[in-house]
Image (cartoon, rainbow, N blue to C red; front, top):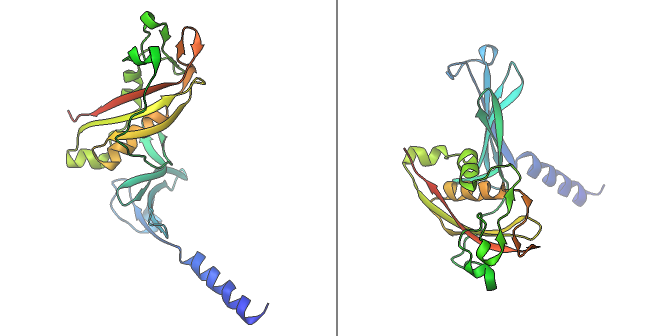
Length: 222
């Protein structure tokens, strides 16, 4: 390896080595910081070169990650792990938000339908069926939505309005935020819409069809 290539090699290695920084602290059951030898949990903060910061907590006895959150500024990214009862759950924030005031439209008989998750026999429209078996989409949204901790702390509430396409194959595509409140609430709204799956597509007179849906999601602190 010549001198120029050797220099390039070491520069590349240096870039990889310093592309992230990590800091680990140790805590007892009450989450008081302690020495590693007495710790029950290890909390690690990793900052990547792209500006994302991941905070994860490891149960040292069980060797299980009990929580993990990745942020870029205030925007959630990646796969989050959170406490859920006696176990853990996952939240998929591995997508980019798309904002626009433009809303897709429905033509012909579909233009007469206002509630696309309910049958409208007058024009022969049959709503798509949720694969979870829920009869009411609002129940699905309510059970699956997480109210972000940052929004709770700051008392942020209101309505996020999204539009999206349910295709004739029953897939959700082209999700757009038409009206946002705060990036953490906007991202959670899109996450729960992305989680929608259907066992049957929307149909018009018995034929599968694409439909455009504009859907509000309300965040309200009790």
